[in-house]
Amino acid sequence: SQQGEEDPQALSIQEGENATMNCSYKTSINNLQWYRQNSGRGLVHLILIRSNEREKHSGRLRVTLDTSKKSSSLLITASRAADTASYFCATEEVKTSYDKVIFGPGTSLSVIP
Amino acid sequence: KAGVTQTPRYLIKTRGQQVTLSCSPISGHRSVSWYQQTPGQGLQFLFEYFSETQRNKGNFPGRFSGRQFSNSRSEMNVSTLELGDSALYLCASSPDSPEKLFFGSGTQLSVL
Image (cartoon, rainbow over all chains, first blue to last red; front, side, top):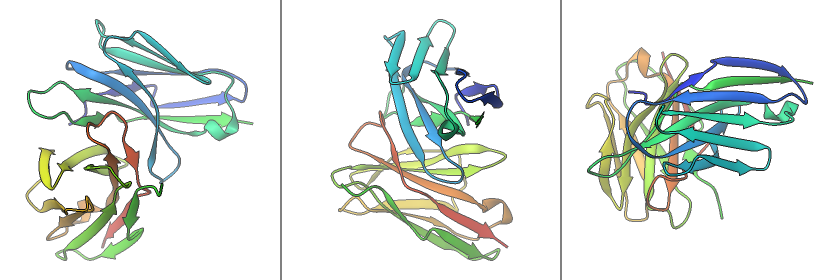
């Protein structure tokens, strides 16, 4: 089962523009993470935001979290061709037992030089 | 530190066969998770092991199994392979809680 749903499924922008991806989820979470995957490779962790945080920055990345709407957004500023990849949100569900991380279907980002 | 190592990188099997995939986590990491990635279903959680015990399990049939050894290395096994098992199998490790997963490059399994 998938917890998060990214929007849009695909995004194409020019180098230098900003890219915004959204993620919605269904259940209560401990935290929400964003990962990047270059074609056919493993995922790389980008940033984690906890359920009691509203905004977080890391370099050119800005993540927001709205727990009342069960949604998050990832903003990549001043995009580069090297940012071309798939981006996934992942949620750590609140469970009575140990938590597990569930990934959304991802947003495919193409940055055109 | 060396990253997460998955072997083999590519694998071709035929229907009905079984396969074993291996994952060596980052040194000191005790949690190992497995995911199946396909174009149609995305990343699906298979299971997670911590200190040789399965802590979490996804919604996969019993043909999918795994184990973890005392050195935290993990294996997953798929028996009686089906065409639909063709996928990229990803392993991820973390020190304890899954707040930041470190992924291997994956094993690309093709079932013919």
